[in-house]
Amino acid sequence: MQFRKSEALFAEAQKYIPGGVNSPVRSFKAVGGTPPFIARGQGARVWDVDGNEYIDYLGSWGPLVLGHSHPAVIEALKKTAEHGTSFGAPVEQEVELAKMICGSLPSVEMVRLVNSGTEACMSAIRLARAFTGRDKIIKFAGCYHGHADGLLVKAGSGALTYGIPTSAGVPESYASETLVADYNDVGSVEKFFEANPGGIAAIIIEPVAGNMGVVPPAQGFLESLRKITQENGALLLFDEVITGFRVGPNGAQGLYGITPDITTMGKIIGGGLPVGAYGGSKDVMEMVAPLGPMYQAGTLSGNPLAVSAGIATLKELQKPGTFERLERLAQRLTDGLAKAFQKVEMPSTINRVGSMFTGFFNPGPVTGLAHAEASDTEMYGRYFHAMQERGVYIAPSQFEAGFVSTAHTEADIDATIDKASEALRKLR
Ligand code: KE4
Image (cartoon, rainbow, N blue to C red; front, side):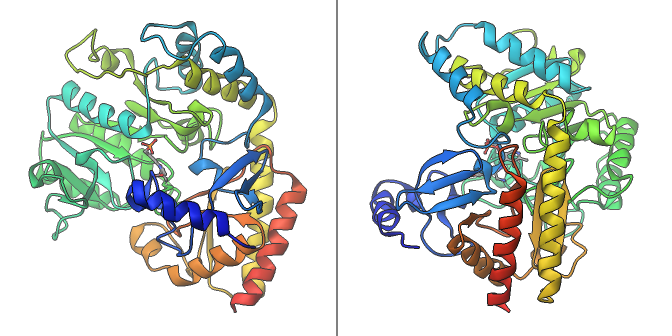
């Protein structure tokens, strides 16, 4: 493979855009090399500007559960665009998408559409603080909820100290309102509630973590968080930006049978266009302006183009057998990859929930950030490039999720497994 056009474009891009990218993880900093500039996508494949073809398991970081350029999505966009793109006024499609979301997620009686997962999580935290009158929030090490100031926080020095910023520009005062617990460790949460009686507004969690690589919740973990928040008058926020309409038709909350107080969404509900959302019970959501005192707004929130792509996507997902097919394809892939790793005796752990998965270069188990960070990221980088050379596009970081779409076929999966076997033999 040659990347001459991508290299030239990347050099040009770096003159005008920080790092040459509009989101840091796209820069390939974690794996090295030049990020291929993508020219087009069709089904389970993308092609870069040098004509290299890839079977795509990035899926734009999750939104493209139907694969690229799905006819129903393209048709919806064309039909909507012919009548205009944005009005700053209510449109019918917003009601349709809101009804589809409320009809799919058990805990969501009302929902507000925004433009990104970051906006959804930022607003949800403001809502939890408004509803409870409390300031502190608990997040988990390894979980990512977008780049709002109070969420760019890591655990303080001591297990009970307040969070410290992970980004320049975040005031200590903001970070100090965020407490950082350990995923799958209920004790690390209980300690914060004991130390902050009546002070914690909410817990925010990825019910299946995707941002340290995929880490499923341990048996009973989510139930414990539901119990501890109810006992302490705090809210439970499920960040389903990745898991919503990914791990099942009713999200992770349907899969695990937990009713959170607020759910955030994004990615799939926009079908590849910018849509985020937060929703919950009526008594919580009635705090939101213009009904209540918690303010949140957005010029392009509920944009008809973006919403029409989301509606088309969710309609396709409602077709019988869709999630069963995603499960079968993803299981076929991860079973095959596990065998390929075992055959070359490469230490590995594959975590999967539905059609989201991560292959860790790590003997395992991987149940939290400390485990994930012990992975051999250098070997991951070599594997990434060996797969790219063979026409398979996986996440350019060990600490991300891979995704199977409805556009992948058994033949794609089997070809991927063969390519992984070849790549791993080369790496040994
Ligand atoms: P956005 O603001 O990027 O739409 O969503 C933020 C967000 C919130 N919650 C979860 C669970 C998320 O995974 C994300 C964003 N995910 C990352 C990758 N895992 C997006 C990729 C990127 O940052 O470019």
